[in-house]
Image (cartoon, rainbow over all chains, first blue to last red; front, side, top):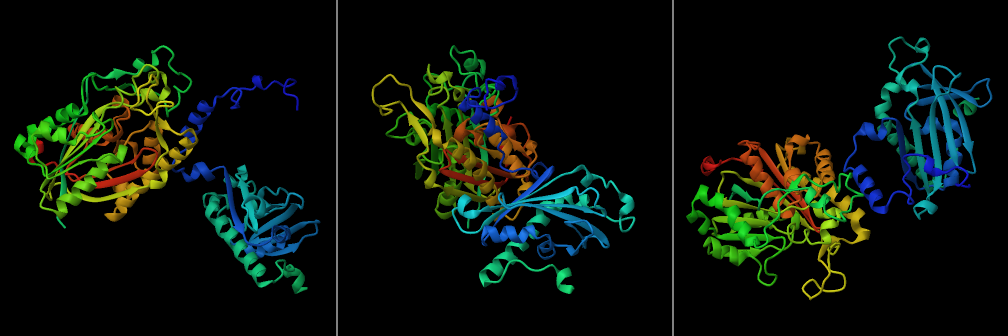
Length: 217
Length: 343
């Protein structure tokens, strides 16, 4: 990139060593550093969690990219079956009785990213997106296993159901009502993922299972 | 075990308040960091006078105690503990000179030279231990901070952003084996692993050797970030620990007084303890960072202003230097009969 072509000096608010002295930078970051942070400040708009799993990263990726495993490691997603649209699965979210959830998995083996594009009640707009990335722990922590990063972004639909008419029952709570509990809820689910994969890896069992709907057939 | 009480505190600020312009208008003053909360100068601070010694300051600070409790009570103290930021004489310390001035003959006399900005808390702990385990009945603990008007007013140091932050002052505490205003608990920790990160430098000479370079106090460059993260953690940790000992939540603290290195630490500490800022008292804007004297001076002024009520849970806490000591003390404050004589 040639910076003389697009001068950075025209862009206000940059902190770069050429224009912000080390002392100024230090003073600025110290001021921004608190002892504690309110939950809303950390998890209000984005919810990112992470953890280490003592299982080879390739196996963690293989497990995550097969979306039916959500039935194992999530708290309440169950009964996934393929739909007539290729790659789209339909299941239920037992968090709220009778709630349908649709899910499409987008994975990139090279980057080891697995994104679950989901939505309650309808499959036209899959706006609840769970972004996962698997990183070899050998590289980032100098130890075996995998680091899993997991981010949700607060799509506006979390704060307002775009299709209340599709709710299973009229008074049903909305998924976004639980946003402030996502850090804790997702952490417990990440712990499930860790426990399942570490158990199977330790016992020499295959990590990957067949979808229940296929087994039933 | 004998209950020990903090019966009274008193303080002294030398001279007239020195405005921030003493530093900001000084030729060659560093200006780059002036808008940052870490280095923004407090509006005022006090400076020890040219010929004023640490012992002079302690003598002045003790006068209200003498007025309220009588000279005999102060002369009879069995324990005298003295922390001086910049000892008048490096060899001998200030303690014996303080005893001479006040006319005391304490059985226990210690020049406390560690625990820096949290030394009032450490001296509370030491006094409590001595008063509760020996025949000693009363103790006088003294904090003299006299570096601002001496080290930080030197011609070159005065230009530095950090020079405008310290202020001088002196605070003293009077303790007795008594149930009147009980010291409920103390939590103190010496953290040897953080020793040596604070520096006193005069370029290539020893501070006492002849030369032209000016003495500076600071942190090794590489350690600044570490010192900040330690400070953020240590004070809330020690305050929480002392609250756990007496089985209260940190939110039950009525009045918190800490050392006062800068506005950022003050903000972070009450945030971490979930205390509203109005319960975390400070004198930073009027007095700057008074190092070890900040706790007793702030406490005395708060009592004078009627901000500390009888029965209040008072917690004092702080950390020293680059984090080589941290401590907190909890007191159920009760103003005794002698306090009726307060202004």
